Amino acid sequence: MTVMTAKICIIGSGPAGLFTAIKLVRHGVDDIVMFEKNSVSFGGLMNDCKLNFDHRIGMDIEELQLTESEVYQHLAEIKEVFKNSGYCTKVTDPNAPEIKKWIDRFAVHDMELVVAEQFHCGSDNAKHLIRYLIGFLEDKVELRKRTGIEEIEFDGEKFTLKDSYGDEHFCDILVVTPGRSGAYWFREQARKLGIKFRFGEIDVGLRVELNAKVLDPLTSKIYDPKVKYLTKKYRDKVRTFCVNPHGRVRLEHYDGFKLVNGDALMKHKTPNTNFAILQTIKLTEPLADTTRYGRFIAYSVNLLGDNTPIAQRLGDLKRGRRSKKSNFYDSTRYDCMPTLKLITVGDISLSYPKRIMDNLLEFMEQLDKVLPGIMSDSTILYAPEIKFYDTRYLTDKNLKVEGFENLFIGGDGVGKSRGIVGASLNGLMIAEGILKLLGKN
Image 1 (cartoon, rainbow, N blue to C red):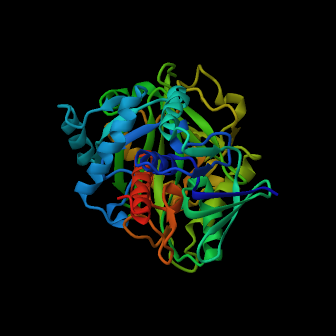
Image 2: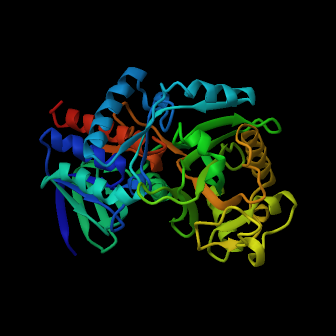
């Protein structure tokens, strides 16, 4: 067994962990070890990398105990890093003259269009961007890839981390940024450490793929439009998420099941556009654990899909029948062919609750009023698309965990952000807390 000691350990190499390390290094802090369970992660940086520089998207400033002014100070610092990389392009200007017309069109149909300043990198540039960001860490941060942390122990002063190889690592300060895929793992560690938490919300929905011509009039002006709607039947919140103009649908591996996601390349385009439609779900009693509920839905879809996501033509769903492989790929019948190949053609409604399906279809019908063609029979629906960031932990203004002087958490997996920029902001907040702890602020 190998034993290692460091001043600071960071679990997770996504935006939260990465920006924690970058800011610490910029302030002369060294003796930092970062653990990553995969060969490379970096969260959404590896998957399309869309950046929304707006406090209304991807962050809850009340949860973070920040003012709008403080948020935008952090956002300016994050933007400077990405902009100077040379791999990110500004794709949406919220002050463009056409924007108000689009906002008004959606408002007529009871929908809110939120427009942010947006940058896009593209999955084909992701590795170059990550290499650039790692360059900030120099020789002051040791990145241990393919090293998952399985157990966290605390003796009142130091943390002991037990990794997947049976080795132990000791540190004075611990930063945990596990990402969405590590949300369930950290919750189990939190129970053992006596960390207080409460259940929050998750998002459950579908990935929609259609001919890009339907959304081109909008996405040519607003690259990743954020549309919110309150359903009339159930009064539930639904929204669009992660729009990928001329992009592709992708597989996402979680602990024990597979989800769908989407991305777009900067250089190579497809004839399709994909986006998620998501319903926000908050449970009360007798089951308040939204993660368990979301995992149940994911397992159900994977079970019916023989361990793969399910895809269905919207026309089949509207008529109450499953899609069949025999005609699913008929290009003379449909103007949109699936970009995700590893799928099972079937019936999503067998595994998704009726209330969720009703809400998502009602939302799509509203969107179709502004962008005719969304409700086309050719439109492809993929499931499951679920975003896990429901567990909320009590922290201070620097995301230091209540009851601990040397434990910080951040990112989507611990409910402190929803997206790359929000997670990056978390990293800066954590770094500021550590600098205070070290007397370097």
